[in-house]
Length: 125
Image (cartoon, rainbow, N blue to C red):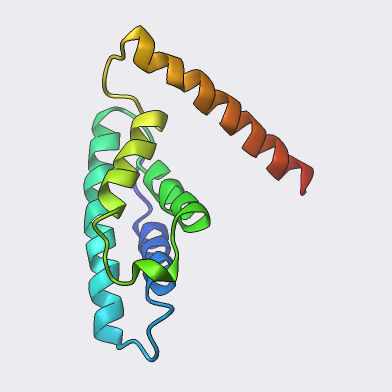
């Protein structure tokens, strides 16, 4: 599977617009700079996900998830939170590490939360 770059670009641009929404009349240069930072981090993750044999487009879906859940204008142009947050989500979706029994027990909590979110989303359709 190949990365659909235009979709990832669009997701990162949408995220940048949300982050910069509080700043009045943001210049195109600033928007481009923030978008590029997000895109560079996301693309590195997409390469890694693909090396794991998984669909690199899950990175785009993870960015869209972050837009729904964690992106807000109070963050401004600071993108330091993005890389570790994206890494955490992708580790859940495309595990690369063996977990201890105690670490893996948290996945049951994640599974329950995911099932609830999916059910809530299905109910809205």
